[in-house]
Length: 183
Image (cartoon, rainbow, N blue to C red):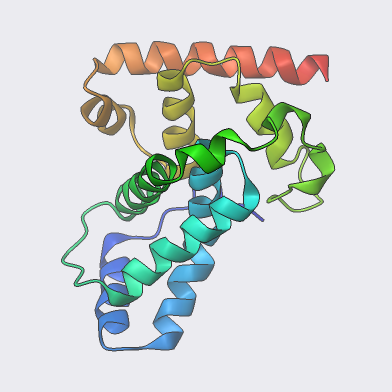
């Protein structure tokens, strides 16, 4: 099940990173279990292909395993940035291949599900609701819902006013609710 708004405290997260740096596979497994779906979703939101998103997710975890990770103040923000940057780099490096993908709107919704069967909708349905949002609004929704960013953190990351972030987030949620009602 996707852990929306779950937040690992920085001290625990940093302790896991330290243990991972020493080769502790149990610590790595704990971090993986906490963030695998979030990383996969972040990657999927950029490349719109599950197999590529899985490759990107694997690359992020390889970076974590091999990395010299210092202290992380905000674990969700750190993971999101790593996933987003890895996905964007992958996209840029493989843009010709990605242009040949079947448009994601035509992918059978039941084939790509990251959420549990008990959830009200699957990832593709949620992704399809985000399609009508502009890129900034989409990023605001993802940062808020899946990475527990605060409004000031989103504003700082996107270099826009906090009030603007709040208004755009609320407006985006209204659009998503309307699309959900139509389905």
